[in-house]
Image (tube, rainbow, N blue to C red):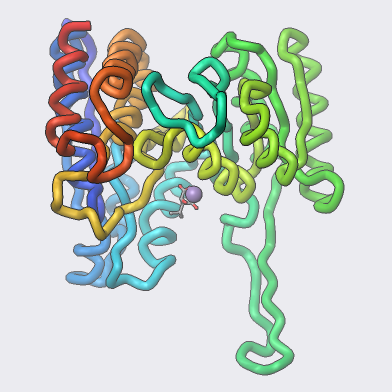
Length: 355
Ligand code: IPM
Ligand code: MN
């Protein structure tokens, strides 16, 4: 008998429940086929619950979630809730309190997927962004001075600790070694202007690099990297960057891999509980219509299995997704796939059972 894993599922808002349902469907098929078991427990955190109870995450939730092997998240964000409340109160709070200090975002163009970049093929677009996930501008440090006067001052602080920067950079080196593709790690920063934070990042990067002579290192300013993503995405293997820059460049990464319909991410605590999510939002206008693309959530599920050590099952789901993009879907966009959300889930599940 294989292993057994307890998974907390937070379907969340909007189309979150629809895509998570398909992900769970595929995960169940994979677990049956590859001989391990998954036990799913659902939590109703999200906008609806907040509107009813005024509560984003009960304090007990954090402790409870620490008891799971992993968390699968759908989407957080509700049109009737002021922006920021749910993002800070649920998503960022989980990332911080569970100390998920890595945000891992693979950018990979699958077969048959329309790429907005001219002449680029799946061979050219296959890299991973390692985003620091617990520090930087996201800490929320700052202050107002003379608020609501013409002399108002708003301060927003970027917190970068040696400890936080180093553990992220180490993870990136290790990940790059394990990935074993081009064995090239690019630091993405802004050393020419942000001379405190990026000095620390650069020094730490150079020091840690000495322990990884097998990994080639490189540096790119964040503004330049947005240019290279479009012009020469094939240059990249693994990229490491801070929270804010990582947030920005991974949306661009999602677009060059075909859009939010396919982009998945993992919030990783290598020593604790990690959380996997499609990186697109809650897409209120498509909610309940059975037209949203579930592939990102399915890929998030595959990342979760890889993290749990079920590599063959994870690889098989990825291959199944490639069959579906390569042989079936007309587009990755909601409403234009040529299939419903449920049908796409069924197709991936079927390939997962037999590939
Ligand atoms: C992401 C999202 C979040 C972020 C938001 C929803 C808080 O954009 O996961 O990239 O900024 O990290
Ligand atoms: Mn983002």
